[in-house]
Every structure is written in C-alpha cells, then in structure tokens.
Image (cartoon, rainbow, N blue to C red; front, side, top):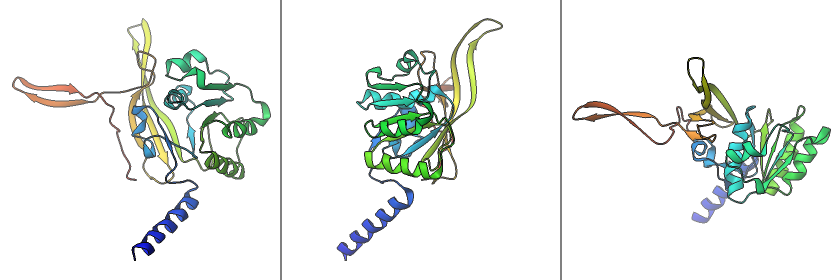
Length: 239
C-alpha cells in the first residue's frame, strides 16, 4: 500500500510539473532579504521567467545576490545600465556580462546566453509570441537558468512591479533627493492576490533596504513607538 501511495504521489507531482511548466524541486537562487518574502520559494526559481517593471534599479537588485554567490549574470538590451550603478546595488561586476545593443536578434542572443549562464536579463525589443516564450521556457528548464524580463513576457512565473514611489530629501526649495520609498508587488500565476511590501530603492546609501515598521509598546511613562528592523509584507497571499 505504501509503495502504491508513493508511486501515485510521484505521478501526480510529474503531472503538476508538466502543467505548470516547471519542476517543484528546481534550485532556488538567492535574492535580497527584503524581496525574498515576496517571491515563491524565497528566491528566483531556476527554469522560470519573471516579468519586471521598467525600473533598472529593481533589475539590478535581483541580480545582486546571485552574482555575489557565484552565478554569472547577463543583461541584454539595456544600454543605459552603468557599471557604477550596478556595483552600488551590490552586483559583482566580475560576474556580469553586458550586451547593450543586441540588434534585431535580441531574442536569439538572450537564448544563447541562457545556454551558458544561470541568470539572463533582457529588455524585449518587440513582442514575444507564446510559441517563442514556450521554446525559451523549455531551454530555461533544461539549463536550470533564470530569465528576468524588463517588460511583458508570456507564461512568466511571476510579475514584479513597483507602485506608489515617494522621494525624500528635498527641503523647502533646497536639498538633494536621498531615498525613494515604494511598494514592490509580486503577482504569480497561481495566486489571485499579489504580495506587497514597502521598501527603499534606493536607500540613502544607494542600495535596497526594507522599511522598518512602527509597533506601539507600553512603558511606565506611556505608550511609545518602537521601530522593527525588517520590512513586513503589507499583504501576503495564500500559497
């Protein structure tokens, strides 16, 4: 009976993998702690594609942890991306490949890089068909690579966007922009409600950081606010 039950579990698991187009035991690449709680599995799942908003800072923040832990990363079709900005956001430049202008064959360039590098980011220069996305997805799963797309991508495992930005640092007509608070939103194909967290991107040091939340604490002198060190998702979906 136990052997039959185990075989049935394996059969159902394989069927689920085929339906979702991914492996449940695929490796997870690390990401910034402020983003980990928003992403399924706590990081970037090998074999998956993620659709991002237009923020280059968000893209670099997602590349930082994989590059620092030994994964080579490539960025295709983002000519304004600078090495200094990438370094400020924690990207290991010794493991970063830049292809600023891939030309009309940008999709083929990205696919070729995905054959040899574990993380590839691309800004599409045109619409991607469902068939092209399916072929690319099969290549990602075969190579255990991750695709980060700055734009629309069919069959993406999750869409990561930015909402409600607020800059700080300016005074009454003077001063400098120091940091930007914003909401990061992650929508997966399986969950109906997105996960959200309020973060700093950039913080005063130019990096990504969680925003501490205030918690009321009773003291002998009254009630005071105590700041918690970690960002807490504003809304977490089930599953």
